[in-house]
Length: 271
Image (cartoon, rainbow, N blue to C red; front, top):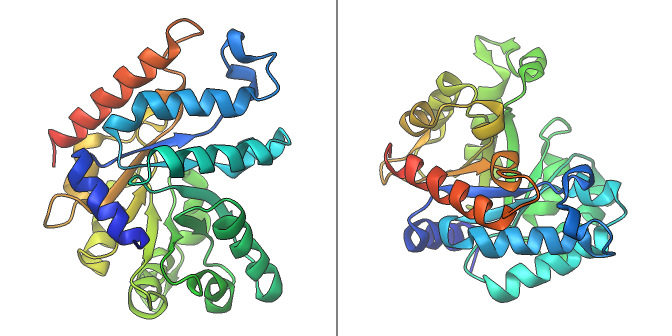
């Protein structure tokens, strides 16, 4: 099953557009796990088990694992999710951007080593930096477009021939790079007007990964109004810290489950 097929099925089966981001900050792990050699894996595993009924997928952020020299724990986590939740796509948030043989190695890392269903990449180096990922024909390639951080405007709002750069990226991805039908775009919930412009530009078939609700303050109602497609789907609305750290060290899995369920329900109320 391809990435987009798995994602579409997850939207329907889970009745959810929520994606939980797995950003395991070692300074915020529960006390009961901090002395364990597999603390990062165990934290994420329990979060996955607690929130799986309420999500359309999971988004591990590779930087949190790599900074703690925990890449093998990320391998184990991806293997665990593939085995126990095979219907939920794994989007590895790596934001890779390089060319030629290097990009080929990054693609092997993401899809071969970790077995992810999709990856986030940067468009800045152009088509040949994305092509190695497209060679994995059934995997998703989700391209940074209008990111949720304020500094994204430094480049993404630059105008070329009357069109802002982020819409140039959206057009490239939807109409030139999407040869396998597995491409998506990253557009932040913190910019609903731009989210609406991207949805209008790419039509209903291109999925959008939408960070920025929860800790970053994006509005759920505005996000749904701007980014849903005609079926009321089309988005992976990501929340990380607001779910992972919904509670302190006590009852943290239960708190994460409640936060995920409430977020899913809030999204469903507006789509």
